[in-house]
View 1 (cartoon, one colour):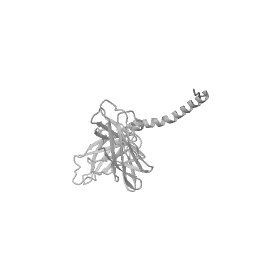
View 2 (cartoon, helix red, strand yellow):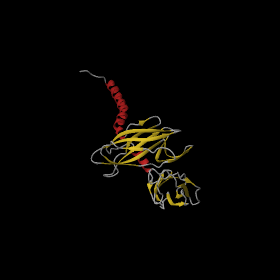
View 3 (spheres, helix red, strand yellow):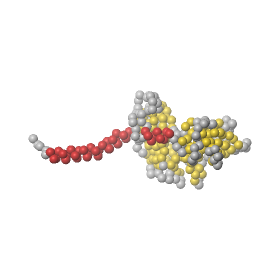
View 4 (cartoon, one colour):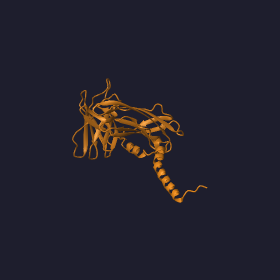
Length: 288
């Protein structure tokens, strides 16, 4: 019988422990790779799908996210881009076992440069998704085609594709997705008694382009307001802030301009998004 000296067995055991320790992170990474699709993009911007983990309740939607990573100095756009830019277009055709996908839009930021004011995101953004399966007993395969624009000094079109199986398993992106969900503006109403609220909306002037005056209340610190029309064809100016009042209230004013041909403002419902730091509310504002 071939015998191995004890000292060699000890060395073999030590080497084995080191090899297992080195390989364990690789095996773990391979096991977790299913909670994110590979990045698709270039040096300016990339996109991928991430999984959100188990559903929050029985028969609740599956949670996922579209993550966009931007190079320093580059930006991309909100659903209403402002004076310039192109909103992202999400296409989930080609998915399997998907009944519907609801997109959450994190609170955006205002950017002002020589071309005007735009609305969007820098560095990175995660758009939360809520996915309803056709058959909750079967896994979901989510397929994304994203058309968007990225801008530094010039704007260029971008596109990305991703595919990810969603089975409700644990995900290392659950916390990042929850943080993005928390920045999506919460539904609110005019006159709500809350620290962040739209107090009133009224029109001043009877000409072709009256002013819309919006009074808001917000905690101390930077506050911004964005206005959208009832359809994407409306191109409203960005509301401009005036000096804050002594009671802490703020006022924003914009000209009722940028309506599509033939559209009447009477009875139209605007959508106001009020942003203060990490908090935001979304308020319907019908015009009289």
